[in-house]
Structure formats: C-alpha cells, structure tokens
Length: 449
Image (tube, rainbow, N blue to C red; front, side, top):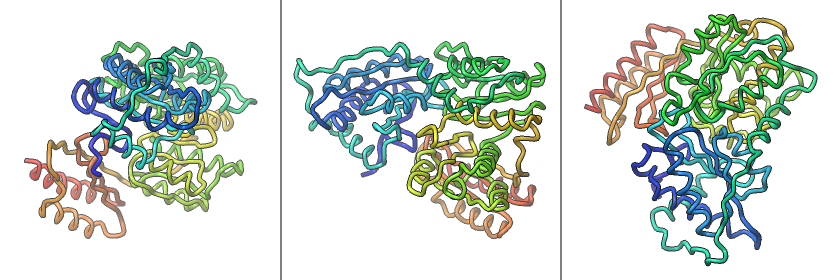
C-alpha cells in the first residue's frame, strides 16, 4: 500500500489542511487507539505532548476525542520535548505516546509522531495498519458509553523529565564556571532546558524562551543559529546550545561563535565513550548525509560508520538490530540509547558538556575532531510529479559521479518531510563539487518548470 499520510517522521503538513486537520487527528486517535487498546483486560492509556504551535490547540483535543472514543485514557502533559514523551510513555507504562510537532518546521506546519509502549517510534508495518484505518475506518468499533476513556493532565511531567535529563550527567561533575547560551527555538524545551543547565550550576543565558504560538523556529533555534552565535561572542560565553522546536535536535557553537554540527558531536561522543569502554557496536550509526571526514576519523580510531537512509528512525532501527549505542544525523539528531530511545538534544548536550568539563579546554579545541570534506547541499522546491525522473537530470547526475570518481560522492533525494529535492555533493575538490551540484540543481529546476 502506498503511504498517503505517514512520512519518514510520522504525519506532517500545513495545519488545518489535509493531512493535518482535526478530522484526521480524530481518526489517528481512533485508529491508533484500536491498535493498542485491545491488548489485555485493563485500562489502556496514551501520553500526549506537544510543542508550542498555535495549531496544537486544535490537534490535541481532536486526538484526545479519538482515543477516548475507543476506550483509551489520555494523559496530557502540554509542551514537552519529543524525547520526554518517549521517556514518559515507558515511565508511565502507557500503551502509546503521541507528540504533536513539526519539529524544525515553521509554525504553519504541524505533525503527529507516535511511540510504542517501549518508547520507540512505530515500525513501518504498524504505521501502515493505522493508515489503512485512516483511509477506511469502517472496522473501528467505538466504546460503549460506560467504557469511554478519560483525560487528565499530569502536573509533574516537566519535573520528571528534568530529573531524568540530570541523571544522565556524571554525578561527580557540575557545570559550575561555564557560561552557556541556550536557544530553545521558542519551542517545547523553553522551560526544561534552561532549568536543567541552571540546576547543574551553569551560568545560563536563555534565548527563544518566549513562545507565542507563531514564533517557533522563527529566526532562532538549530535552523537559524546566527543570533545565538552573535550572543555567545557578545557575552563572552563558553559555548552556545541550539535546540529545534521539539528539542530532538542539537547544534553547538564554540566560544568564537563558530558552528559545530552533529558529525563533530558524534565523533566526540564516540571517541570519548570508546576510551571509557562504554561504546558498543564497534562504531556509530549515521545516515548517508554524514561527512566523509567523520568516516575517516572513525577509521583512524578503529571504529566503523554504518550508514542508513535519512531519518532518525532508520538510524535507531539499525542501532537496535546491530547493537550500537551511539547514532545520529549531521543535522543534530543524536541518539544515545543508554539514555533515550530517540534523538534527545538536551541529553546529547549534557554528554558533550561532560567532556568539556573533564578536559578543561576551550570548546573550539574539544569539539573539533576532524576537518570535514567540502560538502554542498542545495534544495529545489517542487509541487507535483517526480523531478528526478527526467533524462536530463539523470544525465547530469551520471556525469557528476564520473567527474568526482573516488574523490567524492553525490546524494540526490526527495525530502521525507517537505516538498523538496535535496542535492548534496561532497569531495576533496571544493570548486568541482560546487560546479557539479550547480549543474544538477539547474537541471532539476528546469524539470520542475
């Protein structure tokens, strides 16, 4: 069955337009509730969290109505990071967890992410079965009036996650003496992230902590780091931490205001955990987007880089199947399975901060582990069709691959979350990579019309 609603990270789209309407959210609640409420004769429960988008006020009650209509109790926790929902689903012995968020997208979009009782995102097979009921819900049986679910708010959800995050930081360390700028993207972590850092005794300068329903990811957070970098330099801070709207993504800038991406952070964590005999799997898992510089760095330390398709769910699947405990994406999704079942920007930041405290050196030294190969990424927006199918586009790709040879690589793909064609080129020759990427972008643009 062709997937109509679910993409690489749940359901996502423009708020109040299909598939992100109240009607679809209601059906998701009924369909997912039906899938998970039939296991055993006991009260079934679902945890629902959200970020700070205006449309969350529409999606949350629609989901609640759907779940309660098939007999599931609903626990509402309000604005919380995505990894907190995964954690709370396990902690509260819930059957299902739901995060209402479009992650790094602007406020106009929203999404629905589903977690199973183990805290992991649902498999493709389970999503397909839920999607079948979204298309035809005639098989869904509504609960009798006496068996309807109930909804309640969990007042201490934020405190539970704050203590969970702090427990991942070494007990013999504190952040005393570090001045940290943290940009919460006016999103889900706007209260928990500054609190965790402050309680660990850092000097905290908070940004992006005044959400109004419209300003999530707007000129702030991990997708727009300029203001944070400038603030780090202005304040003489030791580093800056940028999260995205649902706080499952992390980027860092050093004391000079220079950005450090997910590849560098994974290199630091992998090498540190290796030295502590804590790393499992003989390396790390990342996606096809990670820089060849990371791969060469790991090889130099006897470690491997296993690559997956783009999307943190595929990273996590490979980690679970092959016994890795560190994985992530260049964009800043970092999964540390000793602590979390999904990307957690705050947990990853604390692991990096632990190394900074331990070494007592500037962040620019601690977090720079390798020189990345020149890498160019450009996007082309399209409306319909398959812009990559044209003969001119295919020829441009083949010609580029021949010219790069063994000194580089190309990756051209459709985005799983937005109507974009992503064209990435990487190689030892910067000017050649730029020229090849531009040629392909021009052909894709012409194909789009």
